[in-house]
Amino acid sequence: MKSIEIFIYEQAIGLDVMGPLEVFSAANYIRNLQGKPPAYEVVLSAQESGLVTLSSGVAVQATRTLGDDYSFGNKLSDKGSHKSTEKGTEKGNERYSDYFILTGGFVAPQLAEDTDLVARLTQRAKASKYQVSICTGTFLLAATGLLDGKNCTTHWHYADQLAARYPELNVNGDAIYIQDDTTYSSAGVTAGIDLALALLEQDYGAELAMEVARSLVLYRHRPGCQSQFSTPLSLRQKAGKSFYKLHDWLQSNIQLPVSVEQMADFCRMSPRNFARRFTEITQITPAKYLEQLRLSQARELLESTPLTIESIALDTGFGREERLRRTFLKTLGVTPSLYRQHFASENSP
Image (tube, rainbow, N blue to C red; front, side, top):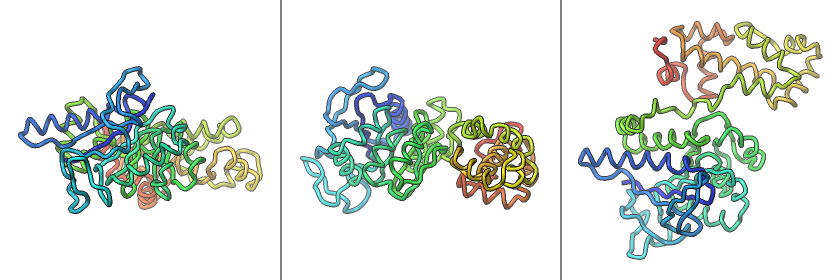
C-alpha cells in the first residue's frame, strides 16, 4: 500500500484536492471488490490541522499539522528507509510518505514567498519518495529548490510567471503533466486527475487505472504530452497585431518550405530587423514559431485523419517522416505513431 500526504491551505482549488483524492479512493474501492488490500493510504495536512476552506467555500478536514511527526498505518516498501514507532517515524533518513502532493490555488504564488512555510514544506518534501505539484502548487514545490534544473509545468496562465520567478526551472507551459526524476508536476485543475491516474498506472498497472477512469466516467487518460490549449490560437495571440497577418499566411502555406527571409519579405522588413522584432514580441524565434505551427497541424492530422505519417510530414512542411519524428520526440516525448494511438479518432487507422 502506497502512502500519500496532500498538503492543503485556505482557498486551495477544490478540484485540485478532490480530483486526485477521488482517483485514489476509487482505486481502493475497486481493489476491495477484488478482495485485495487498499492501494493507497491518504492523509490531508495543513499548516494547522482542522477545517480548511477551499476556493469553492467547501470546508475539508486536515487531520495532520504539516511537519508533525506521524506515521502511516503501512510501512513503506523501501527497506531500511524508516522505522515506525508508536509516536511516529524515527528521524534520520526516513520517508514519511511515498507521495507528497502540493495542491494549487490562486494564492499559491504568494504562499511560496512565506519562508517559514517553505522551510516546513521542504523538510516534508525531502522526506518523501516522490514530490508532486498540481496547478500552481508548482510554485510551492519550486520554492523548496527540488525542481531546480528540472522540467516541470503548471497552469498555462502562470507558466511565464513561474519561469520568471524561478529561472533555474525548465518550464513547459503546454504539457498536461511532466515527470522528471522524483518530481511530478501538472497543469491546472482537471490535469491533476490525469496525473493521479498516471501515478496509479505506474504503481498498479494500466488495467486498474482504466477501471478507475471508467468508474469516474472519464473519457480517456490523457498522456502528459497533450497540449493544455490550442497551439495555433495561443501562437496567434503571441504574434499580436504586429504579426497576425504573417501567422495566417504561414498557416495557409504550412506545407511549403518557408525561410526567415521569406517571412521578413512578407512583412516588408529586413531579415535582421524582422528576426529581432519578431523574437521580442513572441519570445520565440521565427523558425521555432513555424515549427510549432507545423507540429500543431501534424497533431491534428494524426488525431483526425487516416493519412500516413509520411503524408502528414509532407503536408505539414516537415518534408521527411524522420524530421517529423525527431520533432515529436524532442517536443512531446513520444513518436507520431504513439501519439496517434492515444488520440486517434474513429476516422484514423
